[in-house]
Image (cartoon, rainbow, N blue to C red):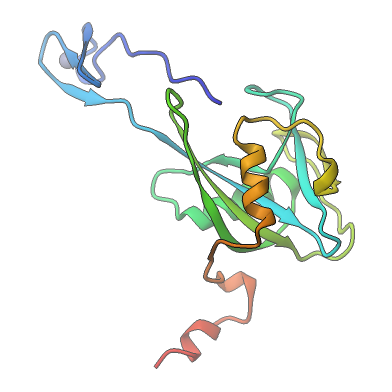
Length: 186
Ligand SMILES: [Zn+2]
């Protein structure tokens, strides 16, 4: 759970005072209105050929010191699947194969909308996952013996992963032979 951002006190256009206006805000000087947008985040449950899950230990708040799936915010204009691969690469140094979308999670009062994916480890056994700048440690865990996880919805996401279901992700060019998708289309 991430707290909602602090309510703004100044108009982003003119810098003068603002007031709440319904679900949004209104500038008292020029009448400019806007709304607080949700934040979109993605995470990946990466498994190896032994069925273990790759977790990172967070070195920053929220949930500093807790284990979590590699995850992070989507940049404006970024494709969801690219963001998912990028976050895994940044936090573990690993290029993975992204396989399926597990679902989307949100909570009342939380600005974050979280989309979880399943992916598979392609670098061979213990092929050198390394913590990136936002993690103090990376580790492989038996899904039946996971450490306490960072966020409220994490166990629901693990349950979704266990079903083996989800929406298949179309392979990125880096995931397979280039042009494979095109060759199979008329
Ligand atoms: Zn203004």
